[in-house]
Length: 153
Length: 153
DNA sequence: GCCTTTAATAAGAATAATTCTTAAATAGTA
DNA sequence: TACTATTTAAGAATTATTCTTATTAAAGGC
Image (cartoon, rainbow over all chains, first blue to last red; front, side, top):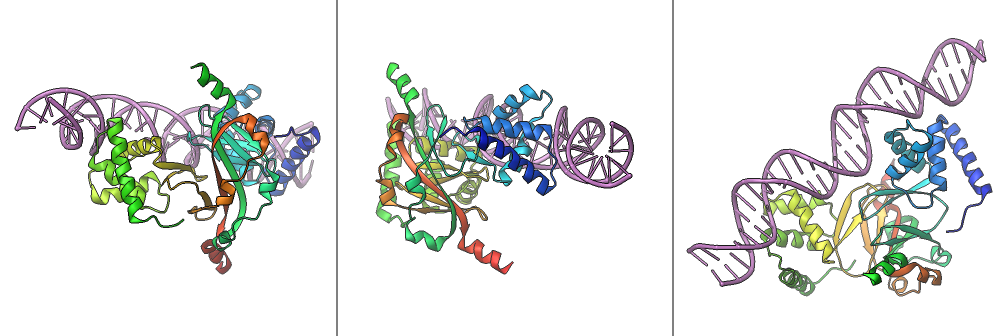
């Protein structure tokens, strides 16, 4: 995934403030730090991982606050929840349409984009199903790092 | 998804027996019934749901046995685990490449196939990532039934 | 800048899904 | 039929997540 530039990062913070005001939500220290951490994390962290990272800056923060804030951000469409086959919930800040590559060995998740897929017409049979809003590819396999480890064996 | 015919259902049972023998696993009443239930369930059941269904035939079966058997079947590639955004784990028997339509309202999952997507070349950049083994689409939206309910409102 | 109101927080209890432990039951085999 | 190694049922333990409640802190009016 391409790096986000400073401009877009800044506009994301502004959007967060706007969203909070519109909803009558308070802009707390905790919310801001959790959101900042999520924006700068590129590894699809778990709730626990985010909690540990934010705790470096806010030592008294509780895990529950991280859960609540993530639920809030998700509702506002500012983060995506990813349920992995490990059974863990991971989060990512949302940079528009993209897809996932998951390594079955080390469970790391990488993003990729595929514009021509995104604009491709879905099979016409699907129209009868209802109103489709999103389509995401999950590709699984073994990443290069894990393949190398296997060879050494 | 197309109905499976009797022939294929039978061959699946035979494969299960073969798999068990090869692995030195015992063919228990419980394993057979859990597998049968999974094969004939077309609604991507949760562990709990499978447990309740199998219990009609084996009233003394334990939830843990269902968990263990599903883990076994998964390892053998005879079932797929689907982690939904509700946070529930659902299962399906594996009938080759297919994709999922998930309703955000009622959370039901439907299968669909898309042959031309399955054989389509992935973006060449992905080659550097590693060895990709599977690719699945998850399309989300609102199903017709839920759309109708919304209109009545 | 201070006060008031109301929402948000931390802490720990509660819940729910899943896994583990152990004694009893059973499949596969001699 | 008897033996051995798995598998099972039952319930305890674990883990992720949500709830409860008393305390703290934002936002807005003064």
